[in-house]
Image 1 (cartoon, rainbow, N blue to C red):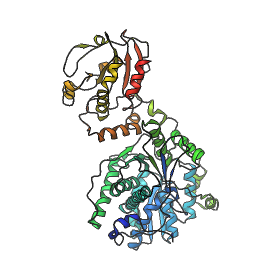
Image 2 (cartoon, helix red, strand yellow):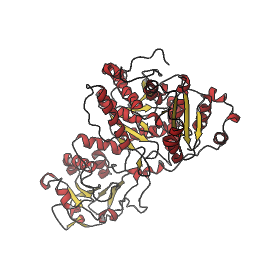
Image 3 (cartoon, rainbow, N blue to C red):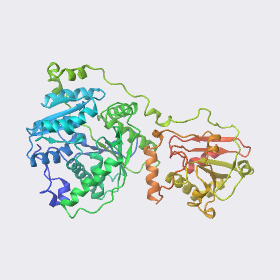
Image 4 (tube, helix red, strand yellow):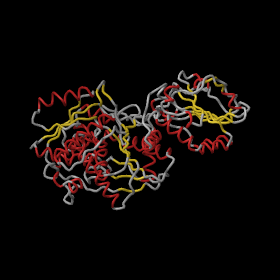
Length: 557
């Protein structure tokens, strides 16, 4: 235990909680915040939870402080938990059980073998954890939830990842710690905060804690495991929201000073997972190399590398780099290589030896790279200098209009969006309308193609206040004519899309009726008066429409 431990900041704000929530000090807090000045993007910060303890760092230490408080309050002598064969949660539990003279049993299922997995398997033995290998996730779950409870009814059964209410409180407290560091001027208040999400507890705690602490920050999770097991939610926005609400309700029972809060469905990105839990991805490996070579910080292939890949994509795609971005680093940075070297592999169970000697999992080179290239993208896209196809169309207020008729005296700016109920589409239309004079000055007639029925558009837009031509294409004939095709799921939720959705939400734009293809990506065509395409842009995700200045520049080339 850390003799220099200080009182949790949560308890300083709510002193009445201290006597009601048991805690065993394990970590060294607060962990530092620092700017990442060498990555090549502006206003990128990191919360160094890799430094939570000199024994073993990472996000689990915060959770285990409150979990072990509950263990001792219930007078338990043994902790049983489960995870993959390389579980960081399992290792942290084993290390601190050993530190606190508690027995530890780890029930494990198979995952891809990486150097980190091999190291953890050796350390389980070093810290005297009992290892029960069950091969499949299903067998492991049955053992944990049924068989082991029958065999050891007096043990403390800890949910994987430490994502219980007690564990989540650790990250509620972490959010107050961050608020204190911001108030001290150690970093500016971030606009967005990214963290990896496996068992939901870290994100749930930050989601609730930032609200309680009064931080105006959007917490974005990056999913590192499968979302469902059959019909069961494993790692979804629902599981995060549910745990945050449960923790909030628990705290309110303990203190009537905890305010009522509305916890919205959180943002959880799924496009960085790769082949599955534990599988390295090319984007993740690139992020590992980037962080190590430029900041001398270590990421792991299972969790933090995937989250930081999302951070880098977000920073590269944002239009305003004045808003701070915070990456919450959850991996352990304590070097445990000396300890692994002392483990005699020949004394390990035969199956564990097999994993130690196994060839390590290869990198998935396809999944993230395909995030901007997968889906129904057509090879015969239209290109500059090609003749723009003519077509007949209806607007919400007129029928049987002809596209070429609009090109007699002006150039056409043909913009394909999704549907009128889409907040991103409404946001883009409103931005164009606000700067309509700039388009007029360039001799551009703006036409927006939507997959919506006329009546749907009339419910949102008024003819007299819509100085652009809205084209109804519910059957997607014009979309196909111009080779504008749907994308993939990986093009659906990206950091750039999330930021635009947040902007739309702040402007009071709500999601309306779904129409057409949900995965439809946008496109832009500049068409000259001679009916030839001057410039073309096919979007890379559902929100990838150039800004107005870029659209104007496209028309001048």
